[in-house]
Amino acid sequence: MQTGGECDTLRALMEIVLATRNKKKVEEIRRIAVGLPITILSLDDFPDCPEVVEDQNTFEGNATKKAREIARCSGKPSLSDDSGLAVDALGGKPGVFSARYAPDAADGNDPKNYEKLLRDLEGISGERRSARFVCCIALAFPEGEVRTFFGFAEGKIGHAPRGERGFGYDPVFVPEGFDRTFAEMAPQEKDVLSHRGKAIEKLSEYLHFFAKH
Ligand code: IMP
Image 1 (cartoon, helix red, strand yellow):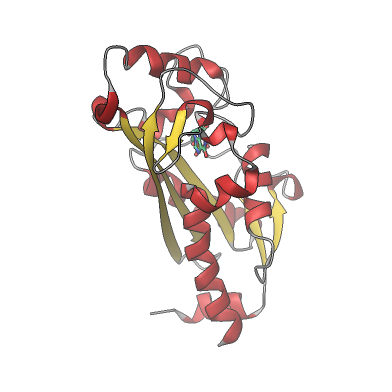
Image 2 (spheres, rainbow, N blue to C red):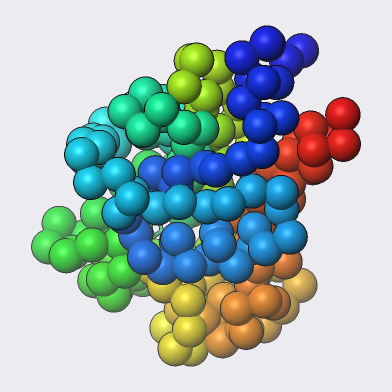
């Protein structure tokens, strides 16, 4: 059920502020969002918006918090994504701590994170290396409503890093049905399989629905 504020804002299509300063993610979301009835603005267009602390213990909690705060301070709908890697043999870790799994990692792109993951999985073989990337996208409206969209990419953690593309854990993540890592795939190939691609696909269906009604 859509509320009045949500409909009005969507019909006035539509500038959306991306609530992230991660340039790789902005690049990836812009690329996937080509063709959607939206214009994507970045946080650089709103220098006064604060840095939002990701201190929630779920992807949904963090995505919702970031999108809400940026929508409030920019006065425009805001889109935020929180994502990470959940490894079954580690009880779902690194999860919401993916960007800072290794204590000395500089950021979420630091190879130290996947190097720690490979060490933690030493001695664990085959099926027991199953994992999934999870992405929750939150779309928040200045009036306060929030919608969330989830995407998952199932796969396995390899035994050594392979490939130069992508970011974060891509060199050690082998998606289901493939024997190459995300870092060995062309960007468009990753987009179709990725958690973020799938969550954006759901967002896209939602936005197209509103563009037509
Ligand atoms: P956040 O969503 O910015 O909090 O960061 C999540 C972290 O999860 C990133 O910094 C990466 O380390 C990891 N991550 C999320 N999505 C991907 C992906 O598509 N490939 C590789 N690593 C990812």
